Picture 1 (cartoon, rainbow, N blue to C red):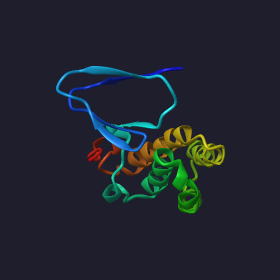
Picture 2: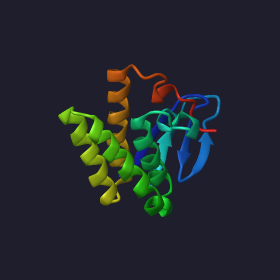
Picture 3: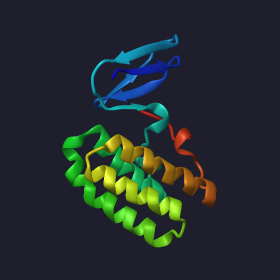
Picture 4: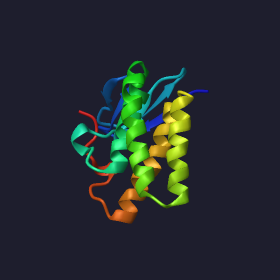
Length: 140
């Protein structure tokens, strides 16, 4: 099934590891086959990996962008999820942590990333963590 991306002027996204930037007008891209795509708002820079939830999100994001490095990143992600689960008592967030792990084990990295995103959003809401992933700078 094709993926339709509606892009704002100047919006950046990553397509199979390449950073792409839209021109000065709104545009629509239709991807006809499977590809790793991350919009600017979902891209986290290394310098923004500064909270427990972001330490889960980042390796999952990297696995999604480059599946070849997934085995190298798995141990880091598993450690960070274990730490986070040890500190949290919220059953919904603990279930998201389990979902991240299951999706990664099934190599469904996009679903894992979306579950990790919920963990980041929860952390920001509960702990009033700033800045938001949505405002973290984007691709370069």
